[in-house]
Length: 542
Image 1: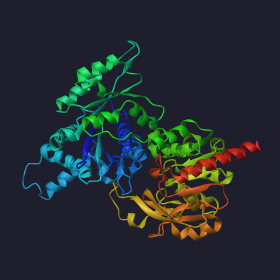
Image 2: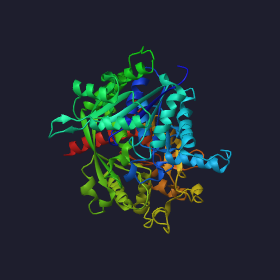
Image 3: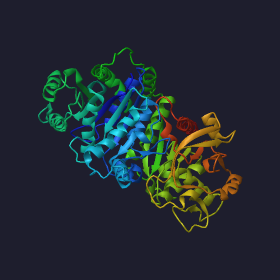
Image 4: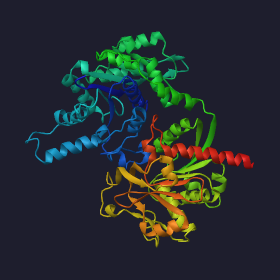
């Protein structure tokens, strides 16, 4: 294929139908046939990126290798396709307007009146074509966030309409994801919301090629016929998307519904290869038939919304499948943990992960959790702020530096064992200014972490402003908290582990961001294994 084919995924009726999972599943099915695929997400909000958004508003902020703070759907794209995304894969209204206004201030529009059409839509199209014109991909799948009919998404929908005429009908396709609700009182599925949603798309000048219909129940032939007739699509292009046990079932369900075949037929691409989903099916088989289970406590600050820790949850899913072990996660708000109750809350778990986060709320609870896990020899895994809490706890309770803290939590602490990074001290803007993206790390030979990775040179993704204060390094190591991962360029401590403990590892980086179905992250795999061993030991003691 000389030029890339452009596929757009729009949503109707309601948000959160799973456009990201459908996009990732289609990408997986095309990739499994040997095509090169990338997926991008257009978010209609005016924030330049989700980096400044509260996790309760938007779930987790996913970070790419090149340091983009992006939507959590990019995590799904990477986990399904096993290929990294970049800055170019997530674009917001804020970024589009920012770029256009910057050009206008520089005088690049030569005195023209700057308008939504053509200037904003041209900037949106530039971002669509940037990936397609790189020559790297056969397909660029673009997910349009929000719902058709939202005021915010109108410029995106208009840009999509224009793309059809820019690239030609054989290089362009629209999939519309919609909901077919079931009214239990009437005992019937209702197509009217979908008809209205397609009508809104038609008013914007776009005829969807394929309808993917989310439903709790099977779509009988007469419903498919009705949708095809009223929405002006071929009956074969009405695809059923039933609620699935796990998101990883969706590529298999879409395979049965022949979604990729319809896409290839519409784009006039010869469909030579059967998709190779063998490894995917092996993963699903292990995921669904565990021979063991462990209970993991996840101590965090945003536990009311599990999407705030989406990548961690999925990394546990991948690691559980490798170990043929069901990982049951129990969410614990760090604000509920005190010195008095830590044993009763955490004592029942086979392992505990202390999660990332920002700000001082709930941090003392995380520190109490670490103390209990260290003393009881329960497997502990700390990520980002979780690692920093382990350092503070060790300084306070082992080194007896009672006032030890992070300057993020207490600016006046006498013992800032965690401090603001040097290059962060002059930063005033909050958005996009943390230490972001992939950085190298050297692991000490003979350390537990290097044996987990099976190598001493790694690269992992970061998102933080504060770091381990190296003034305390010698003291910590003498007392048994070892710095076993160091950034070779800055000397920044990336990994700490406790000498005499079955599993006590904290990482400044976010390993969960690199875990995929086909490459589960080794730290999660070995942590689940450590939890299994801890459970066995406890059972034999009983």
